[in-house]
Length: 149
Length: 104
Length: 277
Image (cartoon, rainbow over all chains, first blue to last red; front, side, top):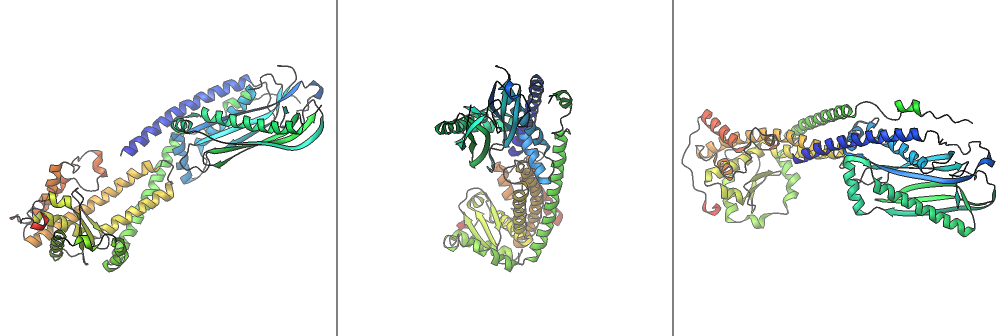
């Protein structure tokens, strides 16, 4: 009985706070993406730039770990029973990837573009039965500056 | 030490090449962070403790790789790649490798 | 190569996430899972009942005898247990489960009695302390005999195994889902169990009337529980649905009603045998 009550409270808390955190995070992501819209991130190895114009290059990287909330975890477990798209986790990895790329951009505001952007996703708690559910996204690339910062 | 994750250093010519250099760290989180993360697991949101931990581990791995490159006499590392794996419960291995070169 | 940022057009529609309501998805899935589990449980319950009818007492005894080698005869040969055994043997002439029942007495202070597979009955010291007459004790023993005769102990164990296997196989252990399904399955099992208890009460009452020619003392055990105040007499509240036994008052009422309907007489109670006091 208590088990059920605790479960419902956790579920409601998870849904409420998780939803709140997600909305806020998305707001911040869209705002910052607009801010850095002019800094191109490319998955190309070369942007065909004029080699003479390059002032310096810099290796840039950033990471973010985002936790699932209780509601998402339970919803995903239910999904695991039936199979299909795990909707609850789609937004989680989407947020994490965009956040990581944004952090890369934020670490080199004066660059003209970032080459060869790679995004690596890992679950740091894989195979750890009752562990903390979270997803880590690590993004890295080569920032090219055409002028001093 | 110049680092890029493409085959060249834009604007500079590669003079000589030393082969693959690498750095790795295995780190585990500590209990305090685990408890906080457990709480966060109910509410959702970013796990700053883990973000920092993994960031530090990567910096450390990069530092080791750069050290190796300087030992060889290189002044740049090109084509840098990362790989992350969990070797044991709660411990993450960060491995970074690239090609040590000298540029003009 | 000219760079054209396309952020404005991507902002309104994110293709990488689903836009349907997570709560609706959650509720649909939950109801679906409940439905499937209820179906599995109902079907396996039927199969268990079939299997129980098919296993005869001899096979049952052979299957489960290994279980009890641990707590065997040395301790059970006290005066109390011999007297208890004799009482059970007498009662078996009125209510025969079809095979030999052996009684064990345990030191446990909470008043209770169990029917275990293989014809083993366990009576606690707490039960002997609670009842004040032989008739009262005989009713509880007859109730357990009725469980043996109805094969309820096997049905209960079978359902328990199905539930455990189901939650382990389907839900996994770390999903948090067992927190919803465990109480639900408990409630289902409790309802089943309460109906079996009422049936056992009825048979026990017949046996009591057959043995003593009256039904005096039948409600003694439940009255005792009520006095102790731990009988869960909270009919109407939600905990009622999770109790595996009907609450004491409703059992007393049911027994009195049945006794009246069948025209059973009340009579003088017999003292508890000295060895059991």
